[in-house]
Length: 259
Ligand SMILES: [Zn+2]
Image (cartoon, protein in one colour):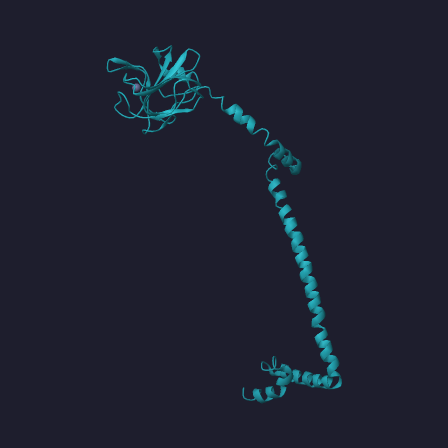
């Protein structure tokens, strides 16, 4: 290693970077270095200028490449923004129709979308003429004889405060506590000879004379009146105070109350 340093010192002015590693290269570099010294002596200025001229066009070409790359990136960004639309379109229509052009289909669908949306909303609301007055409730008592008297309705139990829905559209004929054991109760006349009665409510949300739609919240479950616990006592009257079994009546109208 000590022998390398004096030799390296002789060559350092021209080949300081590659010299210290291998002797074979060092010998070649010595020759190259000598040739370089000769060249510098003959036309050092020319070599120097040409040496500085080479990186200059290289830098210009780099700028040109950078611009070209930037331009290509810009093109890609435009293409990439448009290209994912095509693959996103292709998988959707592919199961139904592969050959069908996705672009016109989607544009046609996009134009047609806003129009059919309001239509189902209009048709969806009036479709269920009769609905469950308290969906998901547990039936705690059905219509029939109970403790020696007629239990004239169906008891539906959920936590107190659960919304009660009008079983069908109609007009509210009674709303309040008549001190008759039903507590806060609501009568709805459906205009077809039948009325529905909702008893023991904790709070009433409608007033007499109000027209309600099927499913509209008319009050909230409670335990007012003669009730041992919070539940909805639901009755169907075929004519006022002529209670019938709500279970077959509602079942015939597509609502299964579970009795
Ligand atoms: Zn009851």
